[in-house]
Image (cartoon, rainbow, N blue to C red; front, top):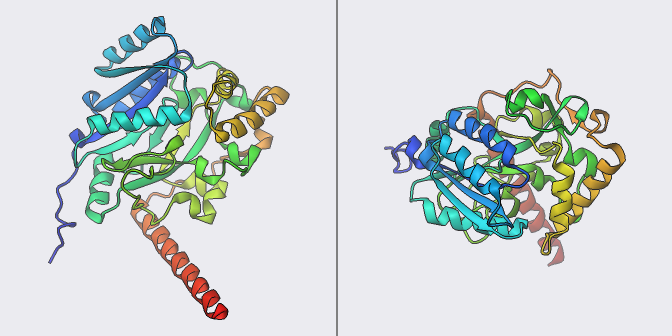
Length: 330
């Protein structure tokens, strides 16, 4: 006899929402690309909820942003006037989520320079997770670079994937794991149920929301293979990150100079700013670059099952080791 979990209603497009925050002074050029991408994924314009951030309430770029959003049919637009820090921004986004979502909804949290890619329609993935009682889907961040790693300006056309055709893994290659950053910061909480709240950086669930029940059985960063470029370039849940543009260094410098900047922001920004001061670009020879040899794993359900089995095995092995340790102490 099927369980209630197996007979739960399917998720339809009206139940999937997109939330983001845009710094209008430096990120506005990304907005049309962002909107086209997520509308193509099937997000309804009425289910897109936007925070516009600036320190200047009279900034003409606020009006420009609203004009762009209206052109795409997006009407839920809110202003956040104040200094940007990651902690405050994610507080703002969690508050926005609590204001707009309804029980049964699913949420995409994406920065304006992040384009999600899924191996199946969103309604199929959400319905599967709902039936199986998973509430969190994570993916890997894949850095998109211009040819030769140059930090170019973003143009309105062509699509960003053509302007930044190189797929790379930059952060782990250039700065590795430090005191305040590591593999977790190269993963993303892409999709989650209405009662899961994203933590700072959008990498993992926030402590004050529902605990994560992950599609792969554990946080993606806890799997050893997540550090491998071969795994990352072939993993079917991915976020193309278009941050390596002409404004990248200025963005780091502005955020590091803002009171209240997080230790992770200072550590990451400092290391990467020094690298850019030295080289002026992301040198392809310094990072892992995807080649045609890395295909995509198409069967996402089977892969997720295998990862869940791996997570369970690791749990039992760790538990056995703890029991053995305690027995030796007795």
